[in-house]
Image 1 (cartoon, rainbow, N blue to C red):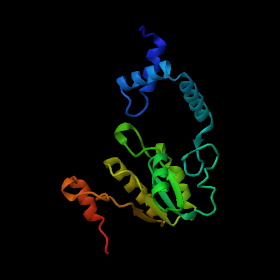
Image 2 (cartoon, helix red, strand yellow; image 1 turned 135 degrees about the vertical axis):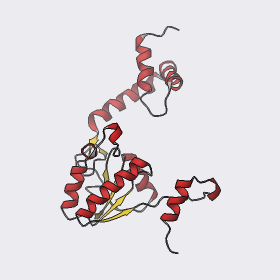
Image 3 (tube, rainbow, N blue to C red; image 1 turned 180 degrees about the vertical axis):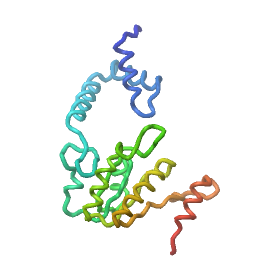
Image 4 (spheres, helix red, strand yellow; image 1 turned 90 degrees about the vertical axis):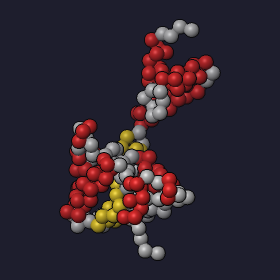
Length: 198
């Protein structure tokens, strides 16, 4: 089979997806072209529509088709609670797994000076304005438990304290059903630091 430029570009384009290497991209491209051309057309149309219609909420920065997302426009949400997360996927995970009824703020990343990502890249100026308005009483930091996530949480925590806002951090540690002997040292240390009374 001849591999023209178009096929090579398709395989290269598919590699932009997380976890898709050269072999997976090749399998996907051949599947779409050989066995599911209608599916490929539908996928292309959905991607085009999503790129044209989906942007960031002006309030929380999550992905939405509207100027303000459904969570931010919901009057039943507690506007005094603000949960800060790294990605829109984190918002969905928290909404599906918890009973949290406050609002969110999505960073779309974390502080990483080595990668050239500073506070202005994460919308922290917008976050600081929100904190300064006085409506938010507690910021819940739900950034990832990585070095960058912890540094980002520390930075935001200091910002919130300057505005007199209470700061809390989601607990990290032993997962439900986890066994202590299989945990790494950092996870176990976090579990001990975050212990609470019964």
